[in-house]
Length: 393
Image (cartoon, rainbow, N blue to C red; front, side, top):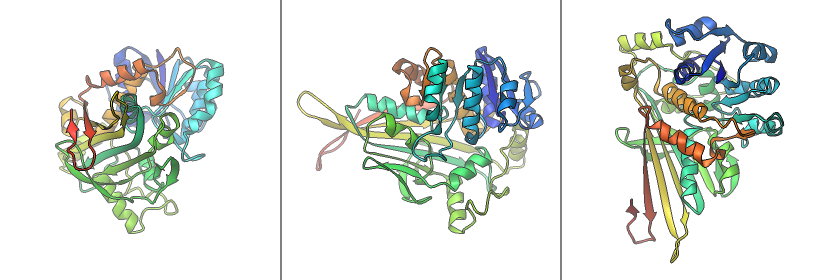
C-alpha cells in the first residue's frame, strides 16, 4: 500500500520505518523536515517533504498518489487531514481525537456519510490509549452478556528529575489542562482535573500506584457502541504526579499557556542517547490495565465476572537493547498503529473506532501484538456474593 504519514516526530517516524519494513511504500510530511530527519535517522531513505498541517492544499499535494493518509501529527489537525483524504479518495487513519466540538463524541464521526459515499474507510484512535485499550474492552464485552463498568488505568513514568516529554508537548499540555471525561450511571460528565485519587495495583514490576482521573479519548467512543453503565480512565506515575503538583501551585492552566521548560520538545534519538549518557534519564516505563465487570448468563444462574487485561510494554532500557532510542510510549503507539494498518479494513466504507472493527480484524491485531515485545495477560474473576470468596481462572 502507498502510505503518506503527516508528522514525523517520535511516533510518526518509527511508524514510517515499521510500515516500510512491512513492505509498504511510505513517505512523510512534516513542518520541520530537518527535525524529522533526526528522528528517522541518517540511514533512512524515507522521503520527507515540508508540509504545513493547517494547509489542506499543501497536504493534498504532498500526499498525492497515496492510498492511505495517516495523521501522526497533533489531533487538532484531524478534520483537515480527513478532508484531504476525501479529496484524494484515500483511506484515513489517526491516533487520537481532539474533542473540542463535543467532549463526549469523536469529531471524526462527522465524516461518516462522506466516507461511505467515497467508499473509503477512516480508522480512528489507533494508538495504545485510545486504541489497544478499546480492543481489550471490546474483547471483554464479547465474553459478557451485560457490561456494568469499565475502568482503564495507565502508568507513565520517566526516571528523571527533569521533565521528559514522552508524548508531543502540545498533546501533553492539552490533556493536562482539559477536564477528565467520565461516563457514570449512563450519563457523560466532566470532572475536576487530577481528582478521585485511588490506589491501584498494576502488574509487576510496577506494583501499587496512586492514579487520578485523566482526559482520555476512550470515553468519547466506547459508551456509544458498547452498552454500559460506568466508564472512567485514570493515570498514575511520576509524570502525572508532576502535573498534579503544578496544577495545585497554579502553574498549569490554559490562560498561562504552555511553558516550554514544563513541556520540552520530544527528544530525538540522539538527544535521548545524550540524556542517558549524562545520567539525566535512567529508564522509563509504560503500562496499562483494563478492567471490565459484567454479567454472564448461565443455565442455572447468572454470574458476575471481572475480566482484567494487563499490558506491559518494553522499558526504555529494553528498547535500547533492541538498538532503538525512543520512549516506551512512542514505541508502543507506533507498533500498535502499524498493526492497525497491517489489518486495515480497506473493503469497508465508514468511520471506525477500534471497537467497531469486525471481530476477525480485532483478533488479528491482538494476536500480532505478542510479536512486538508487548506482553498482555488476561484474568477472569468470578465475583461472589457477600461473604463468599472470589474465584480466579
